[in-house]
Length: 315
Image (tube, rainbow, N blue to C red; front, side, top):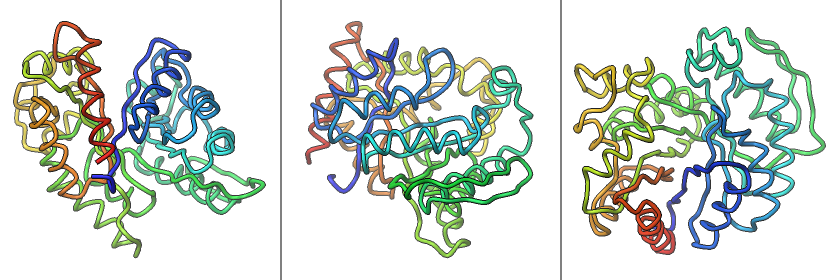
């Protein structure tokens, strides 16, 4: 399984705990740590700079930085800091996020999110990887240069086929978030490949996000997803994605057991290993995992899951 990567989505109460958790999973030998942006959790780029200065081997990434939150040149300047502190270890994930959150938080004019993401990629990727950009578009203009190009892949978030196709054409990878396994395999991967064909380039990696819990108590793991990610199915983009995947009548209030079982990796060590191997076999390059509790002792449950992921990272 060493050709594929296993990463953890880090959740913590503040910057110090975040860095400590990243250091711990590096010690366990797990390949990557990812941070999301948004809410009141602090800026992911700033925290990853702190982690970059205090780690040596672990890959670091954003999943994602919202495109509406800052000008693309500003984000590249922040990327430059992390890349300098952790050469070859940082992956930049960007995406438009969701209308309600972006309009409330940033006063964003949330129209044409795919077009907005396309422009953002068309600025950040060449500026990072070639060292200069001159661009004039609908959403952004930019004229900037760096001292030297950076070794940083630029990935986009994707839920619907159009977004996966865009990432195939314009990005260095696609990052999914709580999408059903079969939908990613049958629909998203095909769209990613089509985008790459349209651009006459190799298919970039797909980073598959999933909640995970090594436990015999699957119902508790389901409840862990409901508590941690409960609002997702009620947001318009996710409701559309689940409908595209064939879930009819997705409840506005949250998850059905069928939906949960399509995204959640759970069971004992053997069952979880088999599920992870199956995801890699159909073409995913990396797993980005949110650990949810599978017992009343949340710390022990997390340790059990991390122990298995550490073993799989070595194999």
